[in-house]
Image: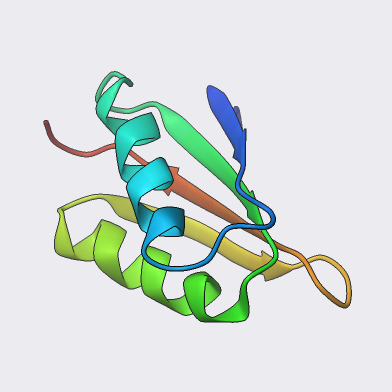
Length: 78
């Protein structure tokens, strides 16, 4: 999987986690993949749901250690 853009939002909590992710994906082209690194458990559930609600495709939600998650999202629409 080619990742086109990565953001690290560790240390942020909702709603800032989604705001940062939404701003990042808005600057991307359709078909590109955004990878989000975060450490807020609630956001590991809310970001994928919000991205899907906005018409994007969630490719991966993975807990990579005791505190961190990686989410990959493909931009599907403007």
